[in-house]
Structure formats: structure tokens, C-alpha cells
Length: 191
Image (cartoon, rainbow, N blue to C red; front, top):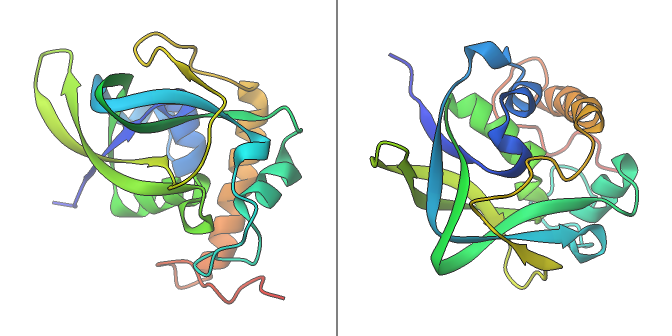
């Protein structure tokens, strides 16, 4: 039996179409259940608040903001989560393979210094508490405004634009993986 990762998707990542575009899996074959992530709040971050420094772990020598600016206009915004003792954020617990989780990490620009991996506890509609992994705002980052984590619009940007950008990002990720697969090759695309 293959290993599964319980990934908590919020914002656009709670939509099966988005997860399908990121993971390259048919959205109808994705397994997920609605849940609320405990002890986190939800906020909106503007593009100008995204880190503009290429980190040493970046797969290519570009900052998260540089990459986002290449695909989005200046009015791009994104949901971000941050620790909040009394907070909850609605989303979906997705059953992903480790490889699919790596695709999500790449999409969320974790190795580029935007988000960071975090563990949490999500509560399903039936009341079951499930340990999950997700991504949260990196240290020292600012955000524009807090929003109600249980009642919010899934899409802050046009879903069709998300599809185009996600499919392009998946192709770039595959190029960095190379023919052997596995973790991305950090030497690809370095100037």
C-alpha cells in the first residue's frame, strides 16, 4: 500500500480543480473531506508583501515575488494562514502521495521562501481530529487584512488564470525534476 500524506488545502487549494492542476491528477480521482484547521487564522497578503529575496534553498535564483510577478499582475493577492490560538480555517483534507505533496510545495513556493511547511490538526465535519501538513506564512512576513477563516470566498483571483499558471508551473517543475524524477534538480536554470 502506498504512503499517503494528509494535506490540508485552504483558499483555492480546497477546490478539487485547483488540486488537480497542481498535482496533475484528475480532480475526480482526488480523495478529500471538508474540515477546519484548528489554531490558525486566515489573512490576505498582497504581492508587495511577498518576500523579494532569493533564498539559498531556491530551486532557481529568483525570489517568490519575482516568480509571482512573472505570472500575475500587481493586484495579485493570496490567502495565508498564521498561528492563532482561537482561530479556525475551513478547507479540505486531501489524501496525496508524497510526490503530489512535493508538487504542492513547489506551487506554494516553499523552497523560494514564501510559505513554510507546518503541521496542524484539522477537525472533520464528523468531529474526527486528523493530523495534517500544510503551509503557513513565513516568519516576519506581513499581510494586508484578516478574514473570517470559516466563511470566505475560495478564489481571490480568476480560476482560469490559476489553471494557466498552475499548468505552466507543473511543466517547469517537471523540467527541474529531469528524466529520473525524484526531488527537483537545484542546478537546473541557475545562471
